[in-house]
Image (cartoon, rainbow, N blue to C red):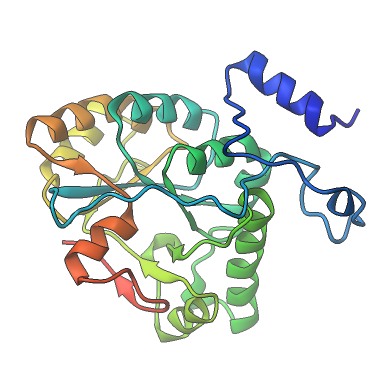
Length: 261
């Protein structure tokens, strides 16, 4: 049976999720009456047009970008609790169907001040796909993110890091920068939290972009150690945009590829 906005909000409060009038608004009656073809998701609270992500001044602070791909997933809320306690900000590169499955988690990611980027619909190697498919993969997930958060992402991470001029041109059309990484924890291959933490910690230095996946419990288990070591070294976990703004002297440009340091 369908659950209305008020009922959904009540369920969220019972489950421990936060609903803040300052950060969410309900859809208008016109939006609620859209046809199924026009509405990607059931009616949900969303962010107001005035919402702005809090920024970290990485020119003054020593910042690192921790990034998580392929979610949201069942362990993402647990990760968000850890990040909230540490006052750390990260970037989530989400898969379209996952965002549709966990829309409230995606909302919380944005509400908590994290950055949300596009990681396509089906996690295909885009360099091996025709242009039409590349467009569909980027456009579909952008539309889903906008339907939940109310705004389009400005960052895009190609699956497997596979990109070329054709893929980057499509990203530029969607006003998204292409974000790769400088540190790969290989956490999808080795599901061992100690190994994952050790690899991430080895790459903890100013300007680095660290690749992880929040769909793996072992990766989430590794985060407390990473946070503790970053704090010990005087490093601040910040979003990709804020880290790159300090490195490049300006915010990331659409269509341009970035790897971090």
